[in-house]
Amino acid sequence: MDFIKRSKEIFQQEIGELQKLADNKIGSEINEVVELIYASKGKLVIMGVGKTGIIGHKISSSLASTGTPSIFVNAAEAMHGDLGMISKNDIVLLISNSGNSSEILNVVAPLKKIGCKLIAMTGNPHSALANEVLLVLNVGVSKEACPLGLAPTTSTTATLVMGDALAICLMERRGFKAENYALYHPGGALGRRLISLVKDEMFTDVPKVYETTLFKDVIYEVSNKRLGMTMVYNNREEAVGIITDGDIRRAIQKFDELKNLTAANFMTHGFKRISPDELLTEALEMMDINKITTLSVVDEMNHVVGILSIHNIIDFRNPTH
Image (cartoon, rainbow, N blue to C red; front, side, top):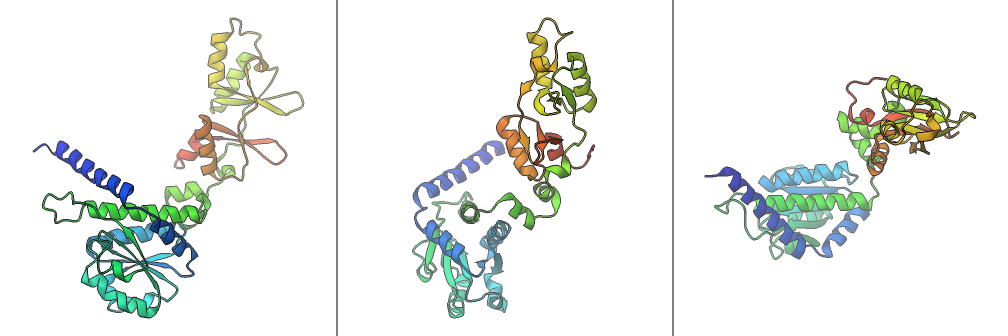
């Protein structure tokens, strides 16, 4: 068997089922679910068992890290004391592909007695579970990728993607930003990147030439500071432009005589700037939009106090400043 071909077929099958789900089974109920959870004074409890339990655990983790208080409770263990973690202010999202799982149905009555609101994520919107809850998110697929139709494959993928959609919708509803994400992810490279400020990573030895600086001296300054650029100042010590490696290459192509060429003749007037108190994520986005690799860091007095390079953002392991 050609497993490369077979793997591609499985990918396409699951993608096809997801597309049908997106096209035909997502309706106004997602708006209601998002608003219900957003307005809740309690937490969102995700419950499932088996494979759906594993998916539920991931969904709960995604929600918790993007601003929606959430925990996962295994439905089977809930009946043996874990219901004590749930209060009447909570919303419980019950996950079951069939909607008829006994472990899931068994917790419905106790949850209603506690007084919390119930919603479901199921592949069967006409199931016993669907009839017991306020709102249903339909994750039904026509068939599993498993050739026997037994192992949960496409159905768990659909549940996972619906969970991602729910988490992101809630994230956007809350206006959740990078600095909020960083609060919940202080460890690891991602957390460090998100919580670092421009002033923490910028070069403070700013390359500097004047409008009257000769071409050869501009090249020396660009090479000496090793940032691939230099700021250009006027005689009043005001930064008025920038010269990059690209500007130098273009000048060589444009001008026949370079000996008496000055910075003013080939600099780029003006420059992209950022505050030292901005997050590195903001700097990275600005670089990406403008297709540049360095930013001038300017304080409230409009003084250039540093240079931020793309390398400051993508590599924290070997700082050179």
